[in-house]
Length: 332
Image (cartoon, rainbow, N blue to C red):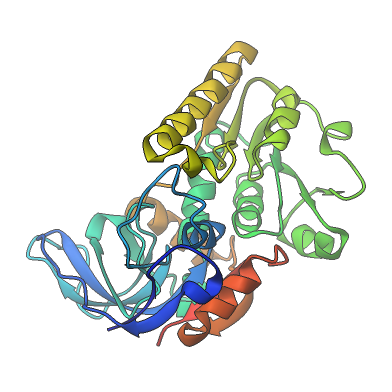
């Protein structure tokens, strides 16, 4: 099969599309998926550049990619929820990328049927960002409607999904973005749009029930005092410099874990739930997301679609920071 592979960490040009062996289906609970589309996430190009080596190490060469939409082509003997020919989508664990490829093998419990009203390219932009936003927001959103929610970087992949999810659950939503993306995020449901280039969010926000921190570092500390007691700050950034691998793999992992613990303790002292969230592959949650998409409550925001052979160009574009929503990769 064809796959986009890195032999060593580095620039986008290190991603090369070539023939590799198809992954084996080894467990009765697994399914094989013929991938039709994937997408670009910041974690993808950070892995490719070697900026995640302080948290997770990969054996190279390695096919990358953390999202897929495709068609089931083989099922394990214990799989009953899916059949050959089903259109499905999903996102593997961070330790097991490989979706810039024509096939993948995954646990059946980690995938769901693709939203019937989306193309494969559209569906492939949703699993990682959808699960991330879901696992950050839903523990708090389930409590009641009318909560005050702040989503950082609302025009990005996670942010654009999170705004829609929070609005669907009856929240008042504020977000940050540049002026050129203000119309986009308002169209997704944002009630207050803050131009991060001219206004510090802490000058206009307070008494928040829930913060989705997509930035980390200084922004985390600026946001914490805005959350009222009993509220939640969910961060998807470790807060450490991305080059912690210079200290060595074990020390980098330890430093990341220490920071996560420090944030938790800091929140506890303030009377709030301050947590670092790492996306977990969950087929049941993906099924709920697919239902919301089919109901029209959430839509995919696709900036551009690149073919697999242009994966290096797609990564370079992703690193510009100018993406509105997501970039999709057409595999077939």
